[in-house]
Image (cartoon, rainbow, N blue to C red; front, side, top):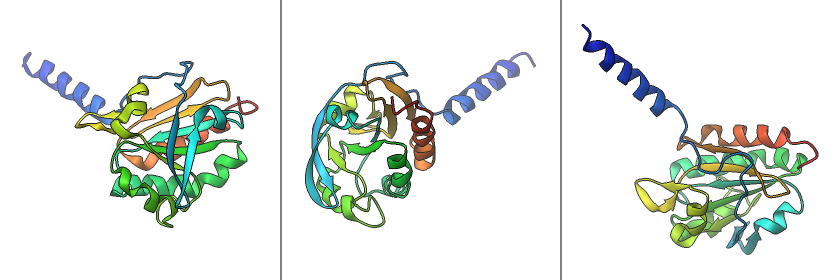
Length: 183
């Protein structure tokens, strides 16, 4: 009987770890690394600079594993649908991926995905994702599904990492709305 208790406790602990979102490496208060990446918005090439975007207000930076895949399409559509709320709160949204870069132009304008409402950028070799510790463990050259809210002064305000795309928009929107004066 004493041997089953440790096994049961281990099972409960393992279950809790599996159910809990993975912790992103950058925590609230950490300095967010600045970057400039090429990408697309509404099918048109763009260059996105985090430093420039921060001048306008907070930035929601969400990493996604691969363009034009089921979970990433769901997440892109959710961010597109919430774009007016993010804009009303003074925030800019940017999606970044290191996977399937050749499909970014298409998803940037697709009405079932980004709808042209926010830019998506390419992170070849996952260089930026590595700086943010947003790497997919089973595919180290691809981004994980990790979302950050970054303040105007460049500090991480909120981080959320979970492969299930369903809560990323709610998590980041709540964090943006919690900022005082867009800081």
